[in-house]
Each structure stands twice: as structure tokens, then as C-alpha cells.
Length: 270
Image 1 (cartoon, helix red, strand yellow):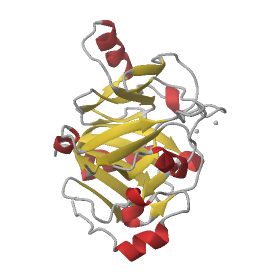
Image 2 (cartoon, one colour):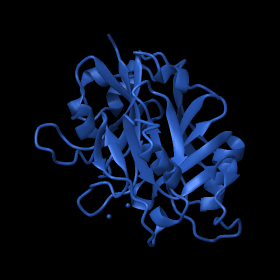
Image 3 (spheres, rainbow, N blue to C red):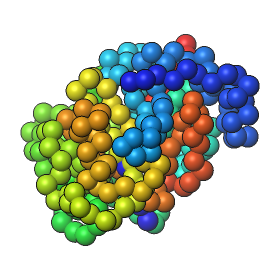
Image 4 (spheres, rainbow, N blue to C red):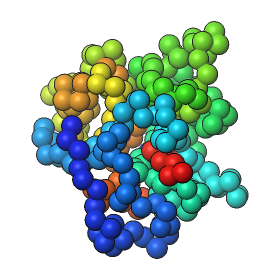
């Protein structure tokens, strides 16, 4: 900061009441087909909100997972979900969104960031303090076809150097939560450091899961959720504390915080 139960869509009236003045009417998820994605809230093993999307949906023309940062008008950070909503064309809706990684005092990303094939920030493999540098850290990235992966940063660095991968979108953060089905080796099961946390996982059931804890938890508890409850082989901590932010109107979650890069599921309604 400067981290399989489907819910039915809300009724049109409930959604209208939940919309802010900045949101456009085309961003109405009430008529969206939620067979391929869903958001819900859970209360065990702790309270959290979760949005999932099937990876098969991301290879279709209807859905796309995207990163957002700056306004095309003035290159200033968007900062809020309301500002992001205002940038979408009339034929697109935002089903859910979340803050997508750590940022500096100017809301610029501090780790590797690629948006629509353009490198915004180079890969950061430096050592240092803070959660970002609790190694190993990693990158959530996907190619132009929509195939999502979470890769340890040094491994991705080698793949980039060899020309083996071409990220269309990428966001680097840290630490990794789950690495090849194992919880990060530096996490302490008996830790007393609890914070709000949000993160993302690529899971064995063919889904991408984005989670926002609704109560403070330890790193170990958060990682255990991805590994054991959600079945994610790899998961990445995005951020925590005041930076944890979620937009999920289908479960009445619409944070008004200011954040840096955002990740969101866009649905093309044409």
C-alpha cells in the first residue's frame, strides 16, 4: 500500500439503489450470465468476500480480465472504482474489480506491470523490506488469449529473458501465498500479525479466485484458505490494510478507497 456456490443476481431495483452517481447504467450486472463467474461472501474459516471466474470464460470473446491504472484523457491515476466505471464504453460492464498490487505515494505500481502489452514498470527483483520483498514474491499475468498464471518473479524473469512468454497484462506483488501447492516457507502458523488482506489464486478447478478478507487475518491463515479451501496451486498476495478494496455489486460491495492499479472482469454485452 503508499490481497462454489453461485449467487443469483440482484433485482434491478436493488442494483439501482446500490449504484453511485458516477456509475453508468450500462454497468448493470443484473442481466449478466453468471454461469461463468460469481461473487459471494463466506464466514468460515474467517469472513471474506470472493469473486471467481472460470478460465475457459477468459478465452472467450465475452469476458476479459483486465488491469486499469491511468485515465486515457490525462494519464492521471484513476484511483477509484467509480472513475474506472466512467471510462468503460457503453457495450461493456464491470462484473467485479479489486486493487491489483502495491503502489507508491503517487499511486504508481512498484512491481512489474504490463497493460495491453505495454510495460508500465519493469520486473522488480531487488531485495528490500516490507511485504513486497518477503521472498519469494510473484507475478499474476496472462497472455493475449486470456490464459492466467501466477509465477515466481525470478522464474518469470528467466522466461522473459528467453522470450518464452509474452504477457498482455501483468501485476507483480508479494509475497507469494502458495507456491506449487505449498504455503510460503516464511509464514508462521502462530503469527499474531493480523490485517485485512486481498489476493488472487489460480486454482485446480480451472478458476481464478480473487479474495478480500473482511476481517484481519495472518498471512498463514490467508494462504491456507487459498491452498486448502479453494484448491489453488499458486496464489499471490496483492495488498492489505487500507489498500484492500473490492467492487462487487452483486454482493453489495463497493469500496470507495483510492488505490493504484486495479484488476477487473469486463463483460462485452454485444
